Image (tube, rainbow, N blue to C red):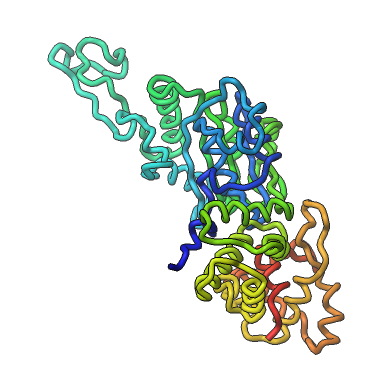
Length: 429
C-alpha cells in the first residue's frame, strides 16, 4: 500500500509542534520575548528558511503550550508562571496597499480560529442605537448620562467608528483586553501576529501605531522577508526600543538540523518508510539549509519509493530524484518559475546559471545571496551570450517572477534562495 508522503513531509507551514525540528537558540529567544512584559517580536529572514513555521510555534507558546521547548531541552528557560496570551494571527497579502487597508482587514477578519473578530465582545461588533425608557425625558441627551443608570434600557455602546478604521481597531483591541483577556479568560495579554508583513506596499505609520498600542496588555509580532527590522517597518525608529528581546533573525539551518527533519519524518511514518544510511545527509546537502527544500525532496523520495513498491529510500531512489531534478521533472513549482524566467532563451538560461553559481558570503548578512553581474558577464560572453544586457531585464521583471531584484547598479539578489539552489542543481538543456 502506498504511503502518504504528507505524514512525514509537508511544504505547508508547520503548525504542529510535533513536526517542528531544530532552532533551539531561536526557541530560547522566543521564550524570553514572550515573557517580557512589553516589546515587539520581529521575525525576519530569507524565503524558505521557516519563518512562518517558527511564528506558529511562537503562537503555541503564547497560548501556554511549551512541549516543543521542553523537548528541545529548554525547560529551565521557561518561567514558573509563563505569560499567557490570547492570540490573533493574520497573514498579509500583496493586495494590501497600506496600513489602513491592513487595519481594515484585521477588523473584518472572521476567521474562527485566528481572527480578531472572534475575540471582540458582542457589544462591540455592531453600531448599537441607544434607546430611552419612559422614565427619561424625550429631550434628554443620553450623551451626558452615565451608561447603565436608571432610565437607560441598553448600556451597550458602539465600538465601530464609521469612517475611522484605525480608531475602530483601537476600540476593538481595548474591548478584547478588557472583556476577554482580563475578565473572561484571565490571560496576561493579547498577542497580534502579522505574518508576511513585508508584502504590504506602503508600511508608513504602522510602526507608530504598533508603538502606541504596545502595553503590558498588548504585544505585536511581525514577520517577513528581510535582513533587519528596517526591511519590515518603514518608520522602524518608532519601535526600535521595543525590540531589545524580540529580534529573531531566522538563518538557514545547519546540516545537522536539516538531517533532523528526515529523522523526525521517519518517526512520523512509524516504520512505513526507512532511509538508508547516508541518505539524510545527502538530502541535507542538496537543500543547503532551507527546510522547505528538505521537505520537497523528502516528499519526492517517498513518491519514488511508492512507485517502486518498496519501503526503503536508498541511493538508487535518491539518484533518481537527482536525475529528475536535473531534467526539470522532480519539482514542478520550481521548474515553472525557472522556465518562466528563462523564457526559452538559451543565452538567458546560461546567464541565470552563471549568476546562481556565483559564490556567496558565508555568514548571514545583508550580502547573502547577492550576485554581481560583471563577475559573470565575461564568462557569459565567452560562452556565446553576445548581448547580456538584452537578456537580463526579464530576470528582474515582476511579471516573470521576478527571479532577481536589483540592489544597486550591477548588483542583484535572488528573490527566492530555494530557487537559486534549484538552478544550481538543475542541468542545462
